[in-house]
Image 1 (spheres, helix red, strand yellow):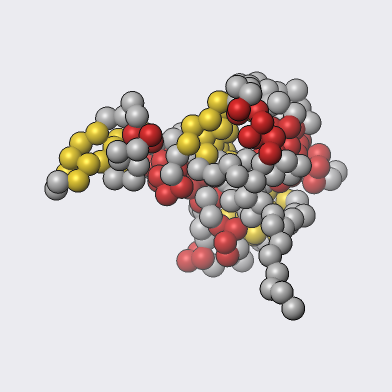
Image 2: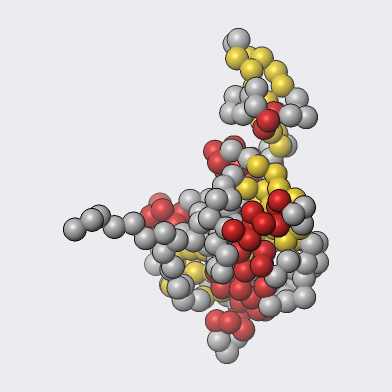
Length: 237
C-alpha cells in the first residue's frame, strides 16, 4: 500500500525527517503568500539544519521572525526569486548590503513560471514587464503589434507546500486563499514535500475537489499550523 506520510514520534520530528536530505545550495520552490498557506513547519525544520546557500522561489520572504524570514535571518538563503519583499526589514538590509541576490518577477508571471515548469514547458511569452527593467536581458518578440518577453519555466530540486487536508497517497486540498501559489509550486518540484493540517482516509476526499493529485507529492507531514496574522487591520470604532 502506498503511504507517503512521514512517521515519527512528533510532528517536529516528522518535519525534520522530511527535509533531512535537502543539501546545501539547494534550489527550492516554496508555496504560500506572506504568512498565508506557507509550509511553516517544514521551513522551521530546515532552518535548524546546517544548510546554506539556498536559492528560494516564493512570492515573498515572509516576515522577519516567521516563514522564510527565519531562513533569511540565519543567513541560509543566497538568492530569492520573488514578486514582493515589502514586509521584511532584514530582507531589505541584506539586499542593500549586497549579502542577498534578488530576482524580481511580476506576481502573475511567477505563478505561470511555476505552472509552466511543472507542465514541462521550457518558456512562454508574456506582455507583462515589456519595456521595463523586468525585460532587461530577455528575448522579446512582437505579436499582433504588442511586445512580449520570453520568461523561463521554473523547476526545482525540492518544493515545499502547505495544504488543509491530505491523504496518505498525497492528494491535497487547500483552503480558500491559502491555495495561492501552492498548486503550482507542488507540480514544479522533482521532490515535493507537503505539510497538511488534517490527514483523512483514502477515498474521503471528493475527487472533483482535489487541488493537487498525489502523483505530484512525494512526502506528507501532518502538523498543526500557527496561522499568524501578517498585518492586522481593523475598523475604527
